[in-house]
Image 1 (cartoon, one colour):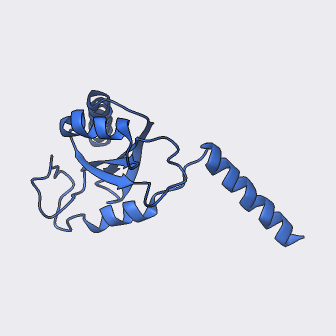
Image 2 (cartoon, rainbow, N blue to C red):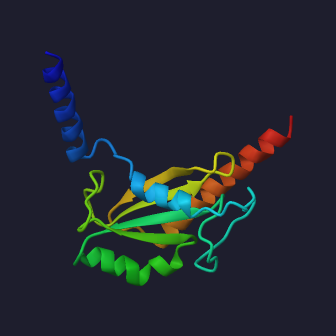
Length: 156
């Protein structure tokens, strides 16, 4: 009986992932980003672009671009939008290593390294072509909300 219940749970989980109602974490990618965090970074350090050879620091944003081989929207985004994004962009080819939550290409996942926990947190997930202006707007609104939280914590 217990095996049958476990089988039903597994089947339901797979169905939910297949129809896109839930996201499985991309733990390998997040773990790799965490390993690239600079240990000497302070909570206020923030970098832009590829000018930092040591990798990521706390407070950084990272956009993961999930692409497919021979995907015209993926190629168009890389050519017209990628260079306009105000954070580092990591490309992940899901043709070679599929992820359950990526059902449309391209898919974009914005992450932020929380200065307090030093862990990467999901900020937003977009499916399909999205403009760099839209991504940058989400980054700026997140920065503003974090600044507001910091201000509220400082003032009693």
